[in-house]
Image 1 (spheres, rainbow, N blue to C red):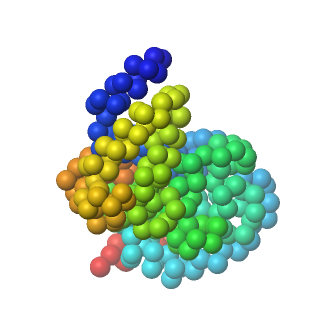
Image 2 (image 1 turned 135 degrees about the horizontal axis):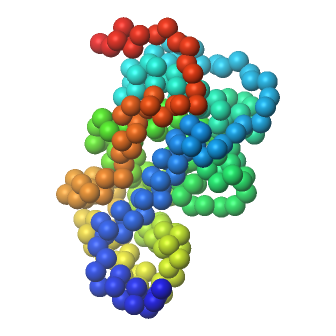
Image 3 (image 1 turned 180 degrees about the horizontal axis):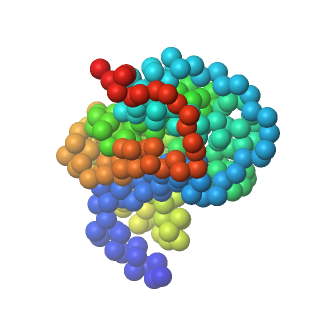
Length: 258
């Protein structure tokens, strides 16, 4: 690939929206890969071991179904998947980053900015592990029926690397460098600075060199294509993915509909 020609093209034509859409592709791709890896599509297998009793009660499952777009049966299915992932290394009913890495990359070593971001936004309590409730909350964001407001908030947190409540210039730089690196493109500093300048020219309304949540909301509202990667159609009927599992449930979802 002619990197010099690529740099000129990016410098002259790459818009803020195109840049951020490109950055979102690997982030959301990891979430989708996670769902498929746990349904057997990626040949993921947990070591044979005695499973600990689950601490999740049926009342917990009902509450999660009430607060999400998933049905009771789908929450039960997600719980089975969660148990599979959370016992792959440490059987404690929690997903550790090493377990997420193993599920996606078949190894527990190595660094990946996009995986780090997925893990961090799943980890609502910021305690270094993902609990089942957090797992459901995060996947619910990508459900086709989830309100746009929640998708906007989640996408903002994806870019807020330092969790300061703002998207800062260095955070945009890190994300752009990471996605270009994934594509095998190494741009010079001048081109990177051009992309970052365009980012803030388009989105930083008060010109304070950082993007607030309100500015982000206004920008994506004007440019809805930025959120096109925030929906995973498969989650609309998640039970069709679970060919590797057999659920012995007597629950009739219609009984729990309002």
